Image 1 (cartoon, rainbow, N blue to C red):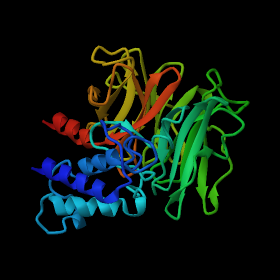
Image 2 (cartoon, rainbow, N blue to C red):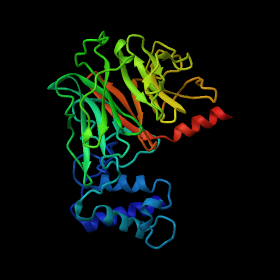
Image 3 (cartoon, rainbow, N blue to C red):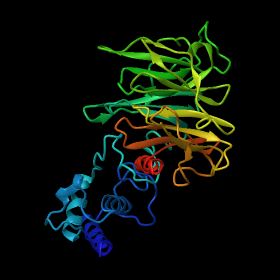
Image 4 (cartoon, helix red, strand yellow):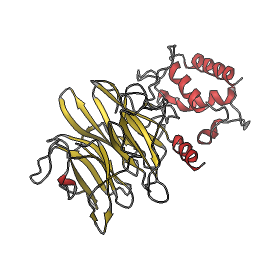
Length: 373
């Protein structure tokens, strides 16, 4: 019945609007309901938005106002109201804090196609700041033969056009990460460092947040300047997890008394298979998501895995996140949004196309419950 009412509502809307046309299967693009990515409002967009918002049937809380007759169910009055409200004046609404994108469910979709992803460049390794006002990611291709960190910033509710970050113009820069407290921006860089181990041009540089903005660029500190490091992530207590580049393994350096202890290789619960890298650590260190290749339970060349920290500080055996997230290709560079709601990761489509995907994080609680049983 809901589907029938939905179809009737869409037909009535199209008849009233007159200038909306087009038909066919829905694309995966979710540029705030722009289902086919053509930049115009049409029947595909309307179908996608309505199907997404009402996919469970009852009107959800964020759009409860669309339940105009207070029935608690979707009906023709609600559908007509919602369509006209969302697309009044022909303008697409600001769907979310995440660059205005329509939030995904458990099925990963491309993030911000035409803005961040699906631009003709290679894009991977991304992060938001805790206030969800800044977004950083890695891009290369075309006139960018080496990786560069790009960013976009929200000002007065409007996101800027992505551009090379001010600190990323002269040297290869990649894999940004902002600490959970928002006070430190870490990233990999090939910037010269006379006292650093530069076997793979992968050293961790950083900025600190000041009252006037980000500080001047800060060089790698001990012990990180002594080993080839990449993809740093930091917990709330300052502990740093990173990839030891020449070993293809994840290490942790404990932050004690304002300084970092010598790094320790994580156990075989994490480091197994041919290569393990790109760890995201939860702010409270309760879980870790990372990518690994060469495992017998893998679906492709490189998959995403999750592991939880036990009360004694050890890690549970890592498990594959499954074929809903992993494919026969490569999934890597995971990061969870600061509010914990969405997993962002990168997927290799071809040698010239890497895209950033996102999905909700309900799977984390599912796996956590499985371990507690």
